[in-house]
Amino acid sequence: MNSYSSVLNTLLVAVVIVACLFFAREVFIPITLAGILSFMLAPVVRMLQRLRLPRGLAVVVVALLAFAAIFALGTLMAREVTQLAGDLPRYQATISAKIQRFSGSGERGTAGTLRRAEEVIEDLNKEISKAQPAQALIPVEVHEPSGGPLQTLSRLITPLLSPLAMTGLIVVFVIFILIQREDLRNRLIRLAGSTDIPHTTAAIDDAAHRLSRLFLTQLIINSGFAIIIGLGLWRIGVPSPFLWGILAGILRFIPYIGSILGLVFPVVLALSVDPGWSMVLWTLALFLSLEALTSQVVEPVFVGHSTGLSPVAVVLSATFWAWLWGPIGLVLATPLTVMLVVLGRHIEAFKFLEILLGVEPALSDAENFYQRMLARDPIEAVEQAKSFMTTHSLSDYCDEIARPALILAQKDIDRGVLEKDKARIFCETVDNLFIDVAHEHWITRKEDHAMSIAATAKLPIFEQPDQLALNWRSNEPLLLVGVRSDLDEAAATVLATLTEIHGVKARVERLEALGAANLGKLDLSTTALICLSSIDMKTPAHIQYAARRLRSRAPEAKIVLGVWSAADGKPLIELKNAVNADYVARTFHEAATIILQEAIATQVAPADITSALPADFVPPLSFAT
Image 1 (cartoon, helix red, strand yellow):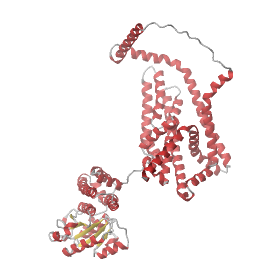
Image 2 (cartoon, rainbow, N blue to C red):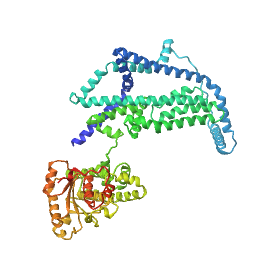
Image 3 (cartoon, rainbow, N blue to C red):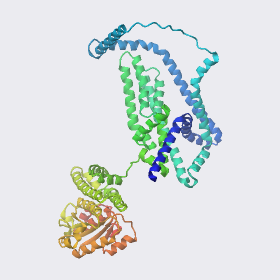
Image 4 (tube, one colour):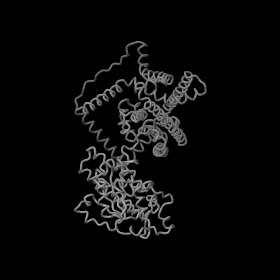
């Protein structure tokens, strides 16, 4: 019941926040714009302060220069638009000629069909007009609007009041935020709680750093985009080329649709100016090629890593903020979402924001492996293994992905959230997966020797029987036993796959094989080494039982105790001594290293041993007995 009330409270708070942002947008939009501009201008203010300029004077100088540049750019664009509007009547003849050529291209084809459809509609309209009774004409009188010059002036000024008021608020807020930056930071820390100063400070610094990088890279990229577009349109011959270049650069701050809006106006103008079609085609080619290069190559390298947002988050944020605040929300969508992700990264209560919107994978490689095994879908895991082993060894894959997944499964079993049937499905899928991994590795060794070397670089591969000791040349010199559960057996299967790929054959037995009824049937005559596989040490009785039974049947065989979730410490050594094991291993790589070291033929020439082992081969510490 408490969980339901908590969810309802969270939803209620979210609804209230969204409602406030919507109905009070006239206040929140200037504050948000001012905050973002302050992030951009703060580094310049700090630079002037380092030059011994007082804080207040530095803020005023930077604010005046920034807004002067913005107003100058707006004035330039307004003048260009006015000049273009005066020239538009000259292009009317070109447009009319193109329309006439298109519509007069004969009665065949699409144009002819459109003309015939237009004639049919006109005939139907005439028939409908004849069928309707004549209506009396309604006299229309035109009156001058009442009121004096003041009302006329008011009607002219009213549409300008809202943008002027917003601009004034933005200027005031920017100056205030830059002057009171430290005081505002301290108040935010106080709101978050003075006991959590490290996390709040880290969040503020991270947000400032990310937003500064975001706007700086976007400003540089979009400025370069505007310059290239302006020069290209000037070379093509489109009127007012730098106006369209500046407009295209500004519109690119709007995700996705901004670049399309920047393309429409120059294309329409090129269509109006050029009697032919070459100017239109060149304009389209210029925009499309440059946009493809910028969005697919430049931005993913620079902007993508600085924002920390997933592509889905960018789309969702653009949709949400456009619905909430209109066109301004489109421009603010990315920086506002970056702030939310930073908030989720540093404050535990908002962790879900980073998971939903951040660029980091939702699941680690081990968690993804675990989930795919539970879903009985090993295909994705096989592809993951192939991709992983292009730069890592197979033993790395076993230890960094498979072993943590097995430990996760064991923890879920201990907590009672992984039922017995699902645990069995997980283990069966792991077994099948490593059969596929072994097969893929065999194919890779045949087709790509370089990749095979990368996948097995940390451990030697025995390709000839005479590289093995005499007692290791049988069909199954290595026995692996899961001492307690199906998970222990699955871990033994992982190790068996690893050793067989490196040239040592192995067999895996269940704990039931050590019972009184089955122990006599267990053939250990050719077994040189036994590995007891256990995820943890919570039930050492099972390990001791298995070691005692196997030692009685194969007294000459050496025993390796593999405890895959154990930490290095005294309890592990005590357990090793208690079961009278020869070696102990905590990872699959350690266990495989011990097994392969034991399998080396003592009579092999030193040169052959050197070729079998890598140059940096060092036995693990667990060799000490």
